[in-house]
Length: 226
Image (cartoon, rainbow, N blue to C red; front, side):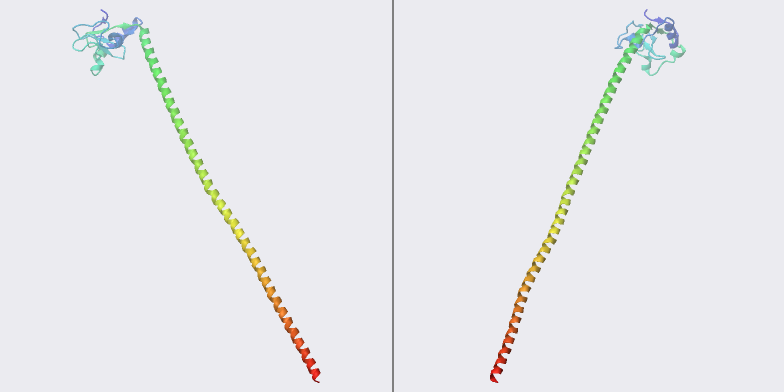
């Protein structure tokens, strides 16, 4: 027989038997294979037989075929058995396997987990890099918008300043034109006034000469009469 039967065996006692010879309890995978549909070391036909396994404390697997199917784990029935703790079942078995095999399985499992964790970490780093790139792009867009707004604001201010300057120059030119026009008008007025004043003076002088001439004629006339 490929299994060792020991009636009323507890799980701890089964583990102790393997520890004595430098081995450990076999796993459910080693007993029933990876597909769990074919028992590796044969089954106990026509009976209810349970084998202690190394998955966890008080873990057992069916190596018989009645009333439970072969390779059915007791925990799959809903719980771990009480008899596995107090030795209340007769048909109990154990089988010891080399320690290095389970170490290899454990290492392979760990390597697989580490590889998955590394991949997940790389994926996470990539996602973080993508998020950072997106954030930088958004910041750049925001800065470009701010620069465009400032440029537009400067453009708005420049025409206003230019308009104000033009208005100021136009005002000065307007005042200057008014001043020049006023001077021209004043010169014209003065010229006209001078012209008319001169004629009046000449007229006045003429009248005076006429009066003087009249007086002289009258005096001569009187003198001739006498």
